Image 1 (cartoon, rainbow, N blue to C red):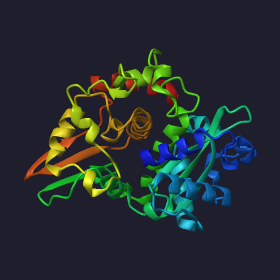
Image 2 (image 1 turned 120 degrees about the horizontal axis):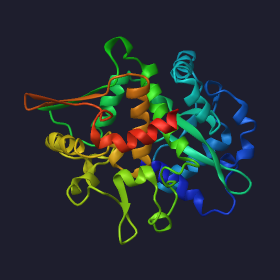
Image 3 (image 1 turned 90 degrees about the horizontal axis):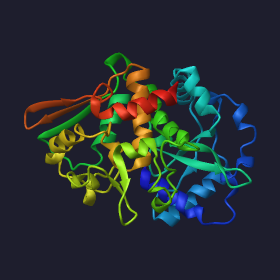
Image 4 (image 1 turned 180 degrees about the vertical axis):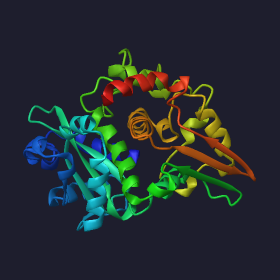
Amino acid sequence: MLRMFLVLLLVSCASTPERPAILQEKFWKNYKEIPLESKIQDAPPELIKYLLKANEKGGWPNKPRAVDMPADLLKDVRNAINELPRALKEKITSKVAGIIFVDDLGGSALTEVIYNTEGKRTAAVVVLDKSMLNRKANEWATWKESTPFKDNQKIKLQIRIENPQNNNRKNALQYILLHEFGHVLNIGSDLLPFWEDRPQDFKDQDIPFFRQSWQVSKKDEIESIYDKDWPERKDVRFYTGDEKKIAMDKLLELYSRLSQTSFPTLYATTDYSDDFADAFANYVHVVVLDKPWIIELNYNNEKYSFGDCWNEDRCEGKKKLLEQLVR
C-alpha cells in the first residue's frame, strides 16, 4: 500500500462534516453477511469519483478508472483468500465491505475506512490497482523492496517469499491482501492508535503494539524508539521518486540495523500503521502459512541473507500480540 497516498485520502475527507456516500456504511448494504471471497466487485462510480478527487487534491497525476476483472485474475484473488485459515477469515470478513480493482490508482493498493451514522469506524474497502498486480510473488516482493533505492549494477537485492513451485501471481496477491487486511484489523483495535488519531491524544496511553517500536516525542511527533541511534530510518521511503531514493550501497547497513530492532520488515519502519499491517502480513505468511521470507543481497560479489524475525527475541513482543489476534 502506498502509505502517503492513503494519508492524503483520509485527510481530504476527515475534516468534512458530511462524508462522501462511498465512505458511509449504509452504501455497502449487508456486507457483513457476504463471504470474504465474494466481496470482490466492480468499482462503483461513486468510488471512482472519490478517488479522482482525492488524487487531484493530493497532487497525484494518476486517474483511477473502473476495470473489467479477467476470469483468471478473479480466480487468483479468490484462491488467495480461500487459502487463509477459516478463523482468520471470519475476523476479517466482518470488517471488509468490498474488495475492488481499478486501474491507475497510484499505488498497489489502499484501504479506505467507512463509517456508520454515528461517525464510528466500522469497516473498510480494499482497493487494488489491477495494472500493477501481474508479477509473480518473488518478482513483486523484490520490486517493492527495491523501490526506496537507486539502481546499482554491482549491488542486487532479491526477496524470496515463495518456493519456486509456488512462485505465482496468486501468492503475490495473497501477501498484498494480507497487508491490507492488517490495516482493516486496525479498525477498532486497542493494539495501536488509528492512523487518523492525533499523537497528543494517545501519547500517555499504554498501547501494546505501538509501544514495541514507537513513541510520541515531547513535540507530540511520532518517532521510532530507535531513531536516536538509527536516524537513517527516516530516509526510507517506498514507491518514491528518484530524487528521494537511497543509494544502493546503504543496503547492507540498513538491513543490518533492521535486524537489531523489533521491526519485522523494512517497510514496517515507515510508520506505525504500516508496521502493524506488514507485521501481520509477514507473521501470517511465515508462521501461520509456513512460507519463506528471505532477503538476499549480492553486495560487491559478497552474498548476505536476512530471514524473518519470528523466532528471534527482538520480535517476541509483537509475536505474542499477533498470536492472540489470529487465533
